[in-house]
Amino acid sequence: MADAAPRLHALVEQLLGAPLPVRVRAWDGSQAGPPDAPTLVVRNRRGLRRFLFKPGELGLARAWVAGDLEIEGDLYAALDLVSGLVWERGEDARTLAQAVRDPEVRAAVRGLLKLAGPPLPPAPPREEVRRHGHLHTRRTDRRAISHHYDVGNDFYELVLGPSMVYSCAYWESADGTLELAQRDKLELVCRKLDLAPGRRLLDVGCGWGSLAIHAAREHGADVVGITLSQEQAAYARKRVAEAGLTDKIEIRVQDYRDVTDEPYDAIASIGMAEHVGSAKYLEYAQVLFALLKPGGRLLNHQIARRPHHDESAYDLDSFIDAYVFPDGELAPVGTTVSHLERAGFEVRDVESIREHYALTLRRWVARLEADWRRAVQLAGPGRARVWRLYMAASALAFEHNRIGVNQVLAVRTPESGDSTMPLRSRTWN
Image 1 (cartoon, rainbow, N blue to C red):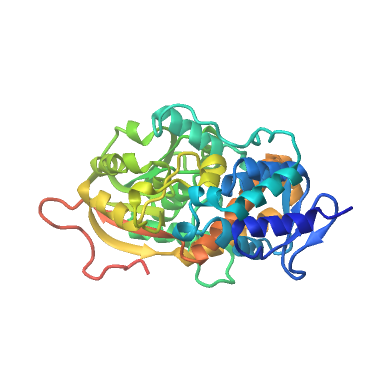
Image 2: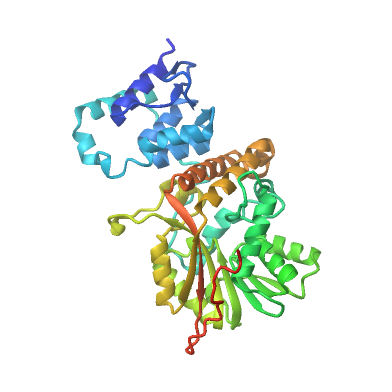
């Protein structure tokens, strides 16, 4: 008798203590739930066992990456509907101890265990990171960067498009093109840094070389780009050579802590600080400060989370940490500004571009979905599913103001007090 979906739907509602707003289709073909809602497809009992063994975000992520769960219908709508049940319950959610004592919850768990069957849960998908050693040593940072960026340049070309810029674009309008928006972002960074012929730029976390090429070709800057990704460096060097800019740009595989050829006129840190870690961020800011000449500028482009009432209880996002950005950490923008000031910088401008990242992520998801079969061929089905979920969920997080992204312009102001900034700032607009 095909009744797995009605039983599953009812038991999950009993477990959550709230209505389940999505439709469910189970492995036996049965369905239950709101008829017009997106459908959560539970392909097999294994997916249910994954969730029961690791309740919450990580268990769902494991089932999704392994292909045991699928969503039919609008992915964004489905994530929006379930986020309040899984990701946003926060302080209103019942504690584990309360849940264990609740007879209804215990009965729901027993029912789900019976429905899931007796075998033990399978091992996590191979795309999940295994922890080794301390956070943010040179070795662990290289491993984390390799996990995220050495997926394959062809895969990133498919997702990012010809610009090969893997950070928030800068949109004039929502119906603009991704390429133009990324070009405008690169130009915005260069203008904020006041680049000009002969000035030295250090691009920390240079990616595939897009900013370095733009800064050298359009502003005449001499650029050193550093990355920990061998694949990125090889790709960037090839692009630099094809652009005829080998005399203006040097791409290195190098840790920021090992740069010694100061001083620089300007430093760009675009999407890099998220990898540094909260315990290392002040040190990072101090290193960048020391690399700048007096009057030099830093442009720090960084994703920020909202502050928590109890910062000591803050935990990393389990899905992001296990599958996307190992060891990555987000900080409130105020914390970032404070660290920069403690390192000696004078912060001159903070610009929030949160909505711009939501638009960017939706374009990346659209590109991925439009060429899904090739994406799977390039990166494997599990990795392609990781990126689809990560980017779609992140777009919603930016849209709902759960996270933001900011460009912080800071100056190593000399003792004379002359910051070199114009009297009317934002001349780059």
